[in-house]
Length: 124
Image (tube, rainbow, N blue to C red; front, side, top):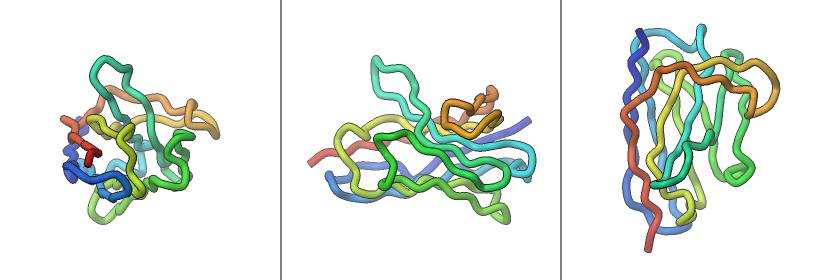
């Protein structure tokens, strides 16, 4: 069983930065790809960024150049560094463990392993 716990959300002004963390139970990065999703009220959950077992990353077009996904295998933690934040980035952010079947963001297949989510609010 995979247990994921997100942290690092909060209120930030437009143009600011946040770093989200997702702590995983056990050494899962050799088995799973990892993804960050976000969901706003009334909107479908969107995949934002992924990192494969060998470290390849993919991003949603609207966050390319602003967000960076990374992981620390020694700490069993995956991160999402978010810079130049915009009000439209406001959402609950979730991490997920899954499978990557190709080279594109859309090739990520989530397993039913989710954290509880962390709220990110970008507002002045």
